[in-house]
Image (cartoon, rainbow, N blue to C red; front, side):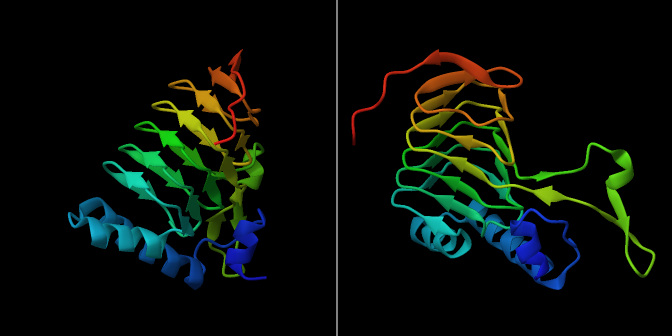
Length: 195
């Protein structure tokens, strides 16, 4: 298994791996281009080239951040507001008509609760940070409020509103409003008619 395959499988992986470092460097360069390009056509081409999938009518409004970029999939008519960060050390998948308010963070990586298992030692004696990753998936017709944090391993269903400032650590069912730390269902919503 390559280090990239280990990363996507949620196994311990070596962040220094040359393939991963090349992917990070490519992502950093292309994200800078997305954040600074003024020509809409060139910006769209850069997004198509960087992200795993881009549906129709993707809008990224303001500064955007990610580690790789290539692990992120956007659906149709997604709107990402300013200063959002996608820590895409695993797959992050957004459905159609997803609105993400400013300052929202998606974190796929995590470390051990046991401090003695947070660092490993390589054969050459150097230390490395042990990280495990899990994917994040967001359904269709979801509105994620400002300053929300979504943790790896979470699936948010369809027709969901995530209240501002929430921390989502568990799966969220369809048709509801959630909020708080950790996020909990506050109110159920009527199901959407098929679009």
